Length: 494
Image (tube, rainbow, N blue to C red; front, side, top):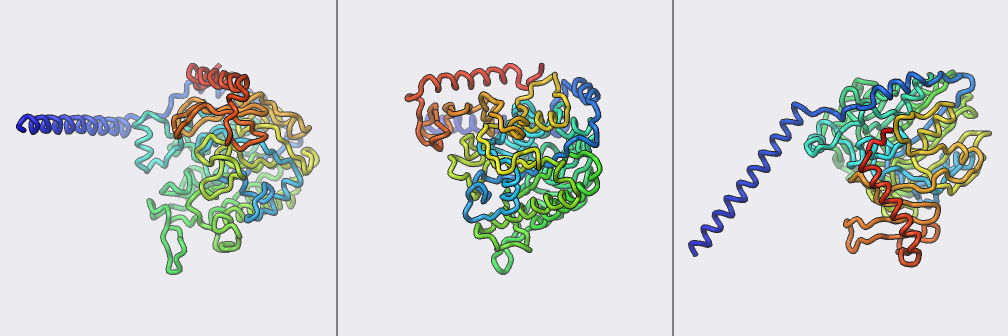
């Protein structure tokens, strides 16, 4: 048995040596991040500057105003106008009755960071290096790990965001709420065109959750790393540090104050709520009222917030000149409703990426209209610029398309197809056209195989690839071509 003991000894020494090498490599990588990490180099900074300098100033008397209300993790079926029978959202229902509801509208990613980057840039997440899940608060070990793995933790400076273009043309620009696109100097909201900022830099489950005003912390989270709070004597969960129960109320007040300050000029306001993302802390003034439980309390409070913003526009005489958009950054999380769609947040199934989309612009958008034109968050960038009379940048691919004909005239979708990018990985995982959706084999599920769905007839349950082989082959070819394109030119430079 001596040879067995020797073999075991050598195996043990080998394992220890490998472990020592792995630990040494990790420590070396950590040291490199600590001393040498730098954000993605802005290779198109000059082109960006030239584009912004070339933009004409808008006519303040004629330029439309824009308010975009973005919820965090609101599911396709979480609104009563979308069929929810437990949660009541009368203000948003009324907005839908006064404007347009889109039934085939998508986030550009099934998670927060890449979706927000796409909404503000008009580009698929792979263009801005935001395709590898989400950015993490700089104080968290996950942020360091992300950098150690070679992934960026902030938006590249040469991306052009909607507030930068509108601001260069004379718009007042403001962000209230969640940013989630970087937390170091040079990559804060004010560095990307928002003239005013009030809110949190990260998701509300990341600590420390400081509340910022522009470039300074206004409310400091004094008890970080206790993100899920504590339970009081009644067994109710309560927050620690920044009181998350009051965030929606604060955001609403700040949004209305922004409208009041800029009532006499064109403006772009992004009201980017942190709710109903976990953890759930309903406002105590309304807690326990919704038939949908604490989650329903949060959504109904968001509805009250939306109603207050709409009422402020009416009071200030701005309703007829202001385009209001209401949507969500991705599909519902485990407690949200997908409205019967397959999958949920983090999935490229419909439940993870199809989101509510409501548009109101009195006398411009037909009241009570419903559109099944497929569209995506990437379309907001080209659409709002077109409505403001501003050109697109020519040095980069803009994956979105102008939706103004859809909104104003009931036109068909400007897209022949849309691509679904996953939470991890730079290549698209699925593609859809007006009827079919093709999803490649991902290896992430048991018996995963290429899957073709007829979205008009089925919630991605039945695989129709053999029944419609030509359509499956056609969409598989489009998916492969898009994958090749992003491999060869991920940033989409021209």
